[in-house]
Image 1 (cartoon, helix red, strand yellow):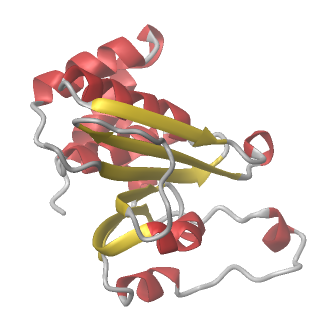
Image 2: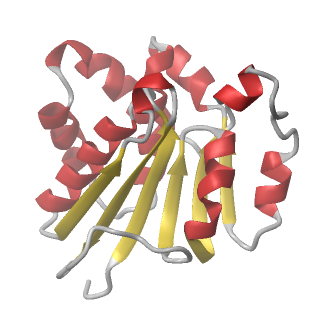
Length: 193
């Protein structure tokens, strides 16, 4: 692959976006790609927006993704999907967890939470894959495994073997959370998208 591919992982602080970017980066490195990862934490400690850029190819010179360049956006929450949509290229894929996490302006009633986000996203000329990753994470054993469910869904878009993903999960995830994360990843990977 000579063309550089761009993936953005977006969510709210505490959702596991950074672990997801490490997992993706490690899988890409194992496949022999040059990989650049850049994390923007924002107010992640207070539930603020978190975005990670993951760029990979034969040779990658910069970790930054500009507007209209992302091939895929993995969004852990609906409003974050809408916030980062301008970065997705036309015909790109948006995988979004159909979950609502209210930001501070909504909590303080300074702004309403938009009701029709998924409908608006679907009308933007991109491929939208929306799913209830929270329900699948709970089925795996813990609501905090939403990130691994979404990684499982995203893994369908990369032609890597399940063996590679399992080895990468083993190397990336703390041992005490390994079984949970493997279950959540498998549930996501089994989704028909």
